[in-house]
Length: 249
Image 1 (cartoon, helix red, strand yellow):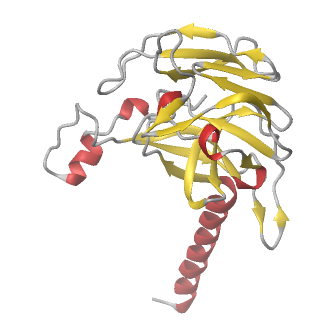
Image 2: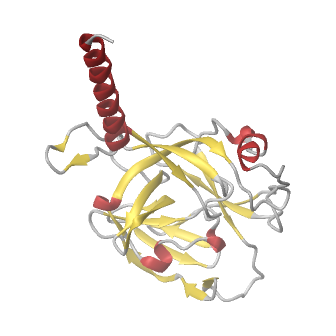
């Protein structure tokens, strides 16, 4: 093969690698979701495409290369905790800098306003068949009537306001102010989520992406899952293709 053709292939390979690295660093990334803390917005086994461009990914050498938008209440974002920089977390933004947040049992207050309660019935895997939800209207510029669901386990009246997750109690009994350049995060499945009620606020510098949509979903722990005996076939035949393309809202 002539050297000119080899050189051409080599140059194309280098360009492809550079473009792929640029996309993965500044634009998009695939993120797997191993827990049910965002059920049913995001299910266990969902694999997400996330947008790192939207919040202005910074480079250690070049600074902020691309323009960014502000984080809004209701955004489902991907971030890392200062105490756990290797793990990607996916939660919803409940409190913005300067907001006053109060969580008491199944009730959430932001700046003194209780998020209106709405009952829904959903079908989840295992024992999670009937949940309740909070309907939260986003601030402008979201379209009129836009909302998202926050799921929680129903409690009897008068039950302790403290939440508990795997033996760890957490809550926000008194109003707390979200510090500058920080955010209060919560999972939509509130009784099955470790979030800002437990590990505190998330600094702006730790937020790196907004969840876009589910590109693939595969959960071998689903009670209805039955293996074919072949790992490769399972990944294709047992994937929940109905979730593919589902937008994260």
